[in-house]
Amino acid sequence: MITRILTVTAVLALAACSSNGSGISRLGNDLPANPVPRATAQPAVLTAKERLVGAIEANGCALTADNVGAVLTQATISREELINLTPQLQAEGRIETAGDGAIRVMSDRCI
Image 1 (cartoon, rainbow, N blue to C red):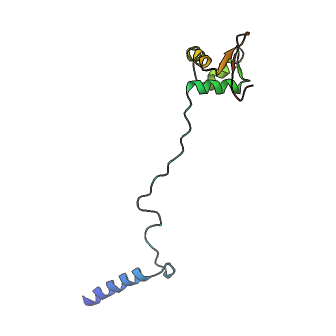
Image 2: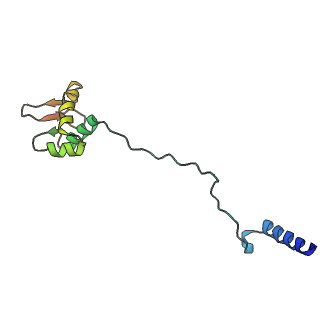
Image 3: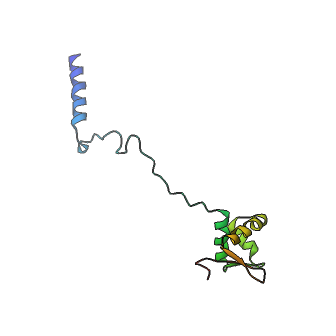
């Protein structure tokens, strides 16, 4: 009985004192016990106004009958939203209406 206890104790002592080169591998890994999740950068959420102005800028700085479908699709807004946003953007000085029915963006990207 004492021989078994000494044998078990000797094996445990060897395992505790052994290096990785001895053939006895370590248990576990080098990761922290409770890793802290990294904060991921969230994309900026644009308002309907910002999306509309950006879509008009991307389509030649003017909203016309020819490109209205593309602009609405890019801005992800409906025609009703366009009707509501136009006077707001006009009051803010961000767009102007042209004589030909086009809506022009007034921004540093559109001169």
